[in-house]
Length: 417
Length: 167
Image 1 (cartoon, each protein chain N blue to C red):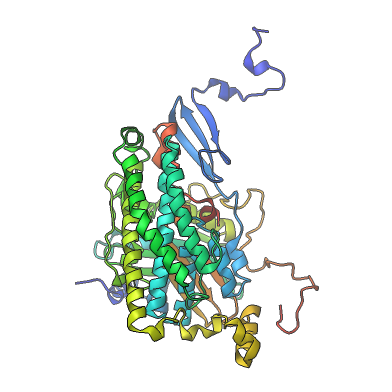
Image 2: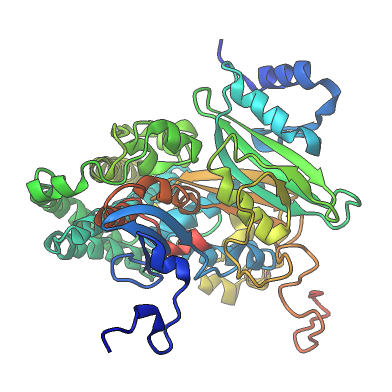
């Protein structure tokens, strides 16, 4: 038995060059506990050093752009939910704003602020997942299970606003489907009151933790120059030291009324990305607080506007209240037309982008005047920056490649569309 | 002096003159058409010029217009000059029979996958691309699914035909 060479054993046929070469081919994924999603990376490793990586993507491609060409505008919101499903409300609002831009609808300030509350809560939830998962991949499960209780509070707020939690389908073209309830405001207050203490504890657990720092500093780095050349956006670009943020560069939804900072890093490694996201959580927290104050002040000063939760001009896209549908002719007609998707949009070509959880989430919409888009393209930040992954992990340790993957926060839904 | 869309247009016209056509500004974004053989030269000019500095490729995709004869496919580039905060849109029209466009990967590393995606769905042939293979669809696929001739639903189905709404 012992004199049989490995390549002569039974049915195992290995290519001659695989016996000669000094490195190992490792197939990481597509479903591996360390990858948090459907990602496959075929790695060439020398011991623990990654020599080369070839990512394969598209495992959950669902042809959203093609499907969108047959769907009326209001039905496309559900497709955007399933892009970055860690912060669906941002995708929803971004889509509504794109259509509003095409239709020329100006939303009331109250709607803008309510949207900002939801979008910034979504950003907090998104960053909480990402940062706590970096900790999980470095061996600390505690932070993850702890902060998830507060992510749960955010999901309860979603539930109160729109009825669902993960794929929210929140809001409509022109505003929200219904007004925020008293309970919703109470839940937002509850979150704002309890969250800072938890976030501080989370940071105390990791920020200056020797083991965590040793694992993260210098892992998966990218320079500002390379990041820009790779069209990075969002926290990953800012961790490399570029202060580009869509909320500031091209403000939408009245972000110009708010006072917030853009945290930036310097080295673009895992640790900087972690710190930038933590900084952004605090800024988002402050934005939610400011927005809530503005809304409450407005409701007190102009009580007659308390019921404003969508733009009046968006009537053609906003379902009338159910009791009106049963009692009024016009409401019934609108209801029917909207549900059947018989509302034509004017022809036009729009690019609108919002600052998603992962960066610039863009919608390139071409309408030929029909009931559906002629062409809709999603600029998905994940898809664009994930191609830099082989360059980021090259010549690093395999374990660094794992945390680099979780720290750039690649979401399979957004990657594959 | 702050860079404005007018200056960008002026600079481009002084460099390329009549070759750039179909100037538009839909929703405030400067849009123009570039001949297919010039796409890289225009982008290189926009990239190299320190005053313009369009060094960020925001998006790259294609649109299919089956009714436009000899120029069915339109490749759309969204460029961003981050320092000046100006976005522009370049359009390159190519026939679907011979959809050849020069690759932008030498200029922008990020164009690599965006071009692969565009190839995957529209079949645009990016000349000089280091690895122009399918990216989201399976390798065995032998057509380009986002082209308009591929309907989302089987058009021969009669059970869903609705005379009232014509679909």
